[in-house]
Structure formats: C-alpha cells, structure tokens
Amino acid sequence: MDSPSHIPYSSYIEYPPDEMIRRAREFRLEVQRRRTVRDFSDKEIPDEVLKDCIRAASTAPNGANLQPWHFAVIRSPELKRKIRIAAEKEEREFYTNRAPNEWLEALQPLGTNEYKPFLEKAPCLIAIFSQSYGVDEKGKKRKHYYVKESVGIATGILITALHHAGLATLTHTPSPMGFLNELLERPDNEKPFLLLVTGYPAEGVTVPDIGKKSLSEISTFR
Ligand code: IYR
Image (cartoon, rainbow, N blue to C red):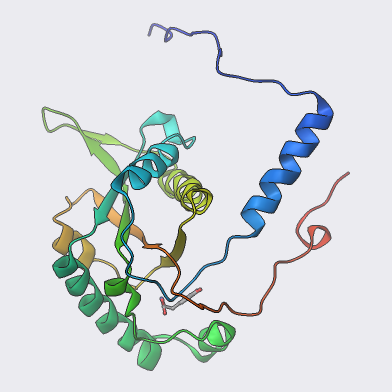
C-alpha cells in the first residue's frame, strides 16, 4: 500500500519555557473556573458559537482519524420537551429501582433527582453520538476503532470550548439513552454517548461545595 502523503506541520508554535509556563498556568486557571450547573436560564445563545465549539471538538485525536462521532444540536422546544419526558421516565426508574444504595449515596452531595427541568429550560441540548462503524456512499460498513476514547476526548474539548466561550454545561447521561436515536432519527451505527445541556447559568445559581483531588493525589513524577 502507498504511504499517505505528508506535509510540514506549519501550524505548530514553539514557546520559550517561561512563556510555556505562563500559558499553562493561564489555561489551568481558565478551566479551573468551570463548574457543572444544573439550573439554566432560557436566554438564547448564538448558533455560531455552537458551530465553532463543535468544530473545536472535531479536532480531537481519534482512532485512525475515522472521526466516529455525530453532534446533534437540539434547539426546538418541542424536541426538548420530548427528550425531557423520555429522560425523566428513565431517571424515575433509576432513582426508585435501578440504582444500588452505594450509587445513590455517591450522588448525595450533588443533590440530583429524577426531575430534569433543565432539559426544557436551557436553550440548547447537544446529543453526542458515537459511531461503532461508518457507512460509505455505497452502503459499505467500515469498522471504527477506539470509539469511546475518541468520543470522550472530543466531548472534553467541546465542554472546554463552550466554557471558554462563556457558556455553562451539564453532562447528562440518562440511562439507557436509546430514546435519543428515535427522537433524533439517528441511524443504527450510532449510540448516544451523552447529552450536553448548554446555556447560561440561571441567575443566582449555586453549585455543590465540592472540590478536586490535589495534584499529589492524582499524579506521580519520577
Ligand atoms: N443519570 C442520573 C444519575 C447521575 C449519575 C451520576 I455518576 C452523576 O454524576 C450524576 C447523576 C441523573 O442525571 O440524575
């Protein structure tokens, strides 16, 4: 097989060490301000912001560059309502029957429950789908690799891009999420990965008083 053509990496920028240190600190402080919120305002957000954040997400490194994702942006009040109804049905089952006590105890500090009004209130939901295989123009299937890793990285970039733009998000995973395929008319090769609720935080919103592990708890240098 021919090897693919290669081009110079001309978009790369090298910074001197002190500038690198400054940039790393600045970025860390920027992402450290991000908090997940569960209460949104209904203020509209520009489509252009969403488009650029999805473009940013699509730069994620991924298995064999097959880009195994689809981002379904939902702004229609009617669709949001249908999604809320379907998600709350699953969540009710989760909180009353499916979740073991240990899980419910772990969720206690977050104060979550089966009611998901944000699914209707927030101006935008982004349903992220992973594709276990692609389908070419002739209908031929092509297997995708490292699908969860790839979509997880893309989702991380999307969340960070939305935060950087000045929006708040909530990573919501009603389980199971199969209803999203039906409501959003997505094909069989796609599986819902998560639902990213996106918008402005509600005025006076509060967040759980919880923190992150320290560097020494999460890393080793040798
Ligand atoms: N999907 C449920 C439960 C839930 C689970 C985890 I793990 C969380 O970090 C938060 C919630 C819900 O959305 O309420």
